[in-house]
Image 1 (cartoon, rainbow, N blue to C red):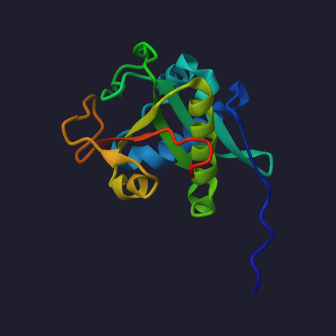
Image 2 (cartoon, rainbow, N blue to C red):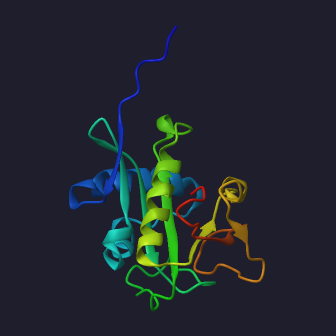
Length: 176
C-alpha cells in the first residue's frame, strides 16, 4: 500500500486568522504537561515580534506554528505573565514555542519552521537563538545544534526538567 501524496508545505507569517488553530495546537501539546498558556499569553508573545512568528501551512490549513521574540540571552519569558515585555534586542532571538500537529510530525515541518526562524534571525542580525526545552525535548533540540546552559535555571512554571538551551545563528553557508 502506498502512502497518499503529501500536500505542499508553506511556511508563512502568522496571521490573525490562525489563532484558533494555534491555540488548539498549543493546548494539545502543552496541556498534558501542565504548561498550556492560553490565547492571551500566546498573542502577547506574538505581538512582541510579529516578524518572528510563523505557521506551517499544509493544504491551506495551519499544521504547526513557531513563536519567537527578541529576549535577553540567558533569560526566558515568565510563562505566568502574558503581558511581560521582552528585554532590549541584544542579538538573541528566543524560540518560545514550536508545535506541529501530532498526525504530521516526523515529516520535516519543524525543520522547515526552524530553518525559516534561522534565516530571519540572520537577517535581523541576531547572534544566537535560545529556547527552554520542556517535557523531555532536550535530546530533540540537541540534535538541532542547541546546547544546554546548566547555569541558567528556567523560572516561571516551565515544569520539572526544563532546560535552557541556545545555539549560534549559523552563517548562510552552514546548515540551519
